[in-house]
Structures are given as structure tokens and as C-alpha cells.
Image 1 (cartoon, rainbow, N blue to C red):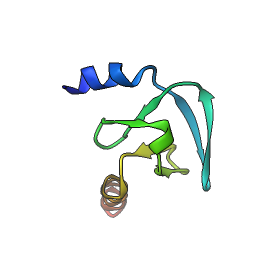
Image 2 (image 1 turned 60 degrees about the vertical axis):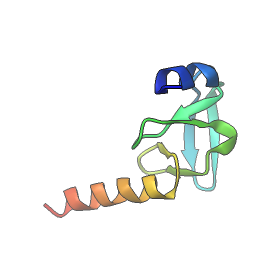
Image 3 (image 1 turned 30 degrees about the vertical axis):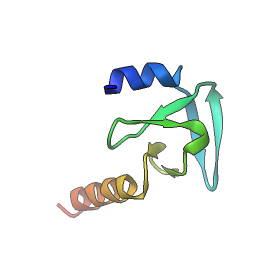
Image 4 (image 1 turned 120 degrees about the horizontal axis):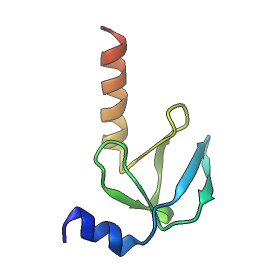
Length: 76
């Protein structure tokens, strides 16, 4: 199954407001898309996000990758 087929299998994409330790669903849906990998993440499996940048992440590795990208750009 490719990325497009998987997103259809998940249903509609949700819109979420990310807060400290929780999130608020602004538009119902079954998934959000990782800001780093583009992979769909089921809302009930969402564990990693950035409050400051309002971005969801697939896992801790994706979160770290984004953090390192941002800190390397800030150091230039």
C-alpha cells in the first residue's frame, strides 16, 4: 500500500491545536500527517508534537530530527 492509499484507508485528515500535554481537535478526522515524514498518524496514536510550531510528529526520532533542523538553521 502506498502513501496515498494509506491516507484514504485512514479517512479524513483532522485539524488539531497542539497544547502542553494535550491537544484539541478543531476538525474531526481520523489522522494527521507528520510534519517531517509526511506519514499519516492516527489521532488516537498521536504522542509527539510541538506546541511552539503546531506540528505533529510520527515518533520521537521525527521530533528530534525537526528540532535539530531548527537549531542548525538558528545557528547560521
